[in-house]
Amino acid sequence: MGRRFGGTALGVALALTFAPSAAWAEDYEPIDCSEVKCVALTFDDGPGRYTKRYLKILRRHDAVATFFVIGSQVSGHKSLVKKMAAEGHEIASHTWNHPALTSLSGAQIDKQLERTARRIEKVTGVRPALVRPPYGSMNGRVLKAIGRSGASAILWDVDTRDWEHRSASRVFNHVKRDTRRGSIILMHDLHRASADALDRIITHLERRGFTLVTVSDILGGQPKDGKAYHSGLR
Image 1 (cartoon, rainbow, N blue to C red):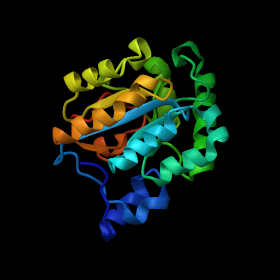
Image 2 (cartoon, one colour):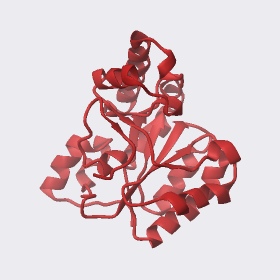
Image 3 (cartoon, rainbow, N blue to C red):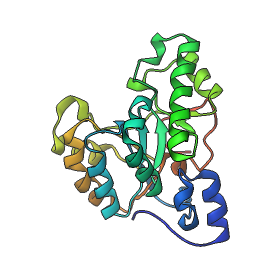
Image 4 (spheres, rainbow, N blue to C red):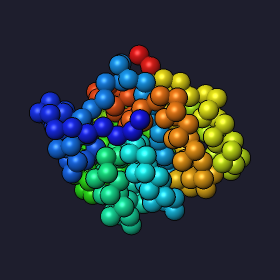
């Protein structure tokens, strides 16, 4: 079960509020993950060499995902980022150049987040409401800065460990073993293993009755500023 579209007035109104891109708002109908068995696929470190391949596979399955992009890479991939948003995917922040935020001062963290948010908004027209701290490195100072930026912190509960073993079968097995209702699944744009495993992963999740949604969808459309989330279970 993948993307969801409709022409209701309620769907349009909610889409304009919560959807990652106004380009598809007229056809967007939000999913209620308290009623539907939802999971969220997420991809870090892009746009990168496998982004186009991910989009092709997601389009084939009529599915959406959340892309945590690096701000410094967005300008060189403007058309690709616009395409991601236009196809219904959520564009979120993975900082400007991927530092461990816990090693930075509050002012430096603010700069990382603000530069990235402005770049994404310039390209997509929408300011990102979600931030994934690189390496999952977070403390109170980082969380406060994310809150000041008007965003929430997004971690994960399923780690494919594609960065470690570079094996498509092991990526798939992590998803198969660990995914449950409300899961946020971590993958990366840098590693071929996830690209090679993605079609099999989505097919498996669909067969188990999961609906693939964005992170904002899985959090009920209104994640709270300055709060950290590992999954959509409530």
